[in-house]
Image 1 (cartoon, rainbow, N blue to C red):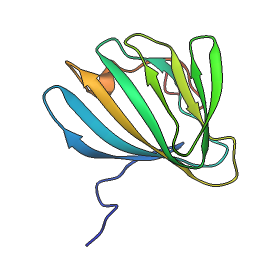
Image 2: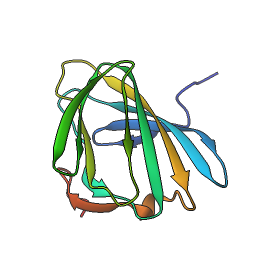
Image 3: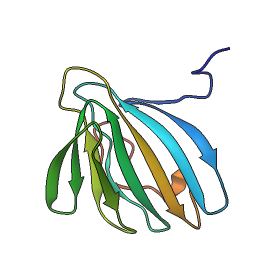
Length: 117
């Protein structure tokens, strides 16, 4: 059985959707060392991030914090946010989305290292 056959690969790492309901979605996200996601916001969902392994620099609005395994943060509806792995090994988190729509087209990218704006 291939545990990674449903991974969605991105330039910064990959994610796997663990569950996708009418009012929530849960993903496992892995960020490669030295990589970061786009600076972005969502209008139709809020997110809760729980770091499983490694360390991740999290930007929310004007604030940047370093989260380690076992720590978590909430990203409110419409908040500008970004994940960055400044470490030397992969970092992973569980992302719980809550709202009324969870499509990837609810991502408004404000900055992106990979030309996806």
